[in-house]
Length: 367
Image (cartoon, rainbow, N blue to C red; front, top):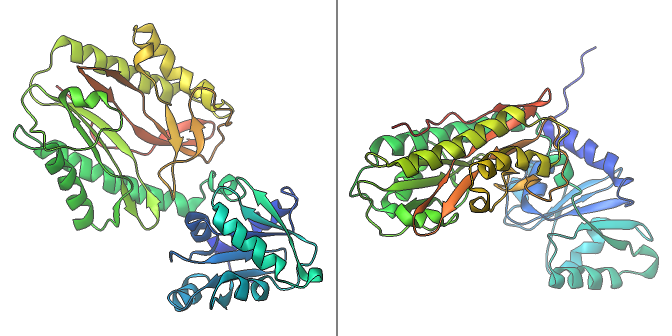
């Protein structure tokens, strides 16, 4: 007898149910958009999941009711009409005295007050005990399954192609804004859903700002240009940084670029499963510090990525996050010299069999 394979949503639902006892709750309300999509497949912008050991409910309004029915096959539909106090009790059913977790990092104070009033409006014997949770779903999302890896790789490949395209056409006379638009246009024209974050294009001394915004500044011969970009595709994100030089660089640029490239390469080769985020960060930081530029590398080495461009784990000084197989994160050292410029190189990798396998393939700058 053959059995039907579980869907991704069913597997994730099962994993979440296994964590309820660990978080000392009897059920969970999921309101974060990415967590909701991860667990159910529903991509609409409004909805609430209720998950207990025996129930899986998706509550949404008229605008998304049909869409939820199509995308969230593992869930019972509940149509919301009117304010929270009207439909909340019907959705949760009989949870009197049970611990109902909500996402503390997602629910605003005003929303929490609305939940509290909705609970208080129920008969005393039917009132659940609201409990804030942190990292309930994010702790699952940090480990990418096969479906997620395929989706991530597709987004990364498109981002790589957009970056390669713009590296091939960028020239003196382009403005930073024109370069940013060329990237976005390429992504849209090749099937992408949009950007994973506003593109950073920073030429000349402006590149010393790690999160610079594109300007009307005209790029000139002799400018270094930081290109930090990513695309969104089918719910997953990419993130990539390349620093290029227009024309012939001087020795100062060559040396700084070589330091950053060596730091990244060293980190990629030495990061191992079991390290903390801080230990991984220091693999690159030690190289930059040895070159006398340690104080010029002020941000973390990397961050997790998936349905959001910044996810767990955090790879940075003071980060206690333990790196494990199945985690995808960036490796992006940089140095930033005020009044001169900055250099950052970023790629994404996944931990497999204890080592990093790199996912990005965009070309690096070459003189």
